[in-house]
Length: 195
Image (cartoon, rainbow, N blue to C red):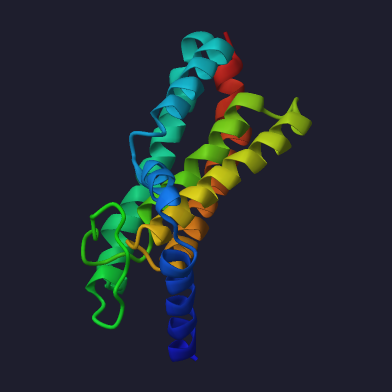
């Protein structure tokens, strides 16, 4: 069973990294994998926090920082050393395309990029739109998940993760998002809105 799953994972990797690759996509995938490209999203979120929560804008910022810190720590400090799953570039039977030229560190399960994106982008939406604007919130949460999925896809496309790595990262990040949004709705939102 495990051997079949690994074989399937390798087949998906080859399809994304090689069969479906294109030089015109390389630049976009490089941008999506860059940690700097999302800075405008963070700045927009902070601007919205200040506008909505005034002097208590720091409350949602701390929550979002903790969500990312938790997803990053669990993926990097716990999962990767625990599972020791070698990245594609270190697998002798695979010859991955590395459009970024970076193979990553030796171990890759779970993907920190995927975990962080799935933890924080939908959380931004919940904090900004709250419960009063459910239609807008649903629409923007879909956008947040599409962006997180594109980031996860870029990690496989760039040859630094197996599909299972990003899938595991997405599950971890989504779990942290659910926990964080519940804490926000039940505990922190009321405090942040009080003058």
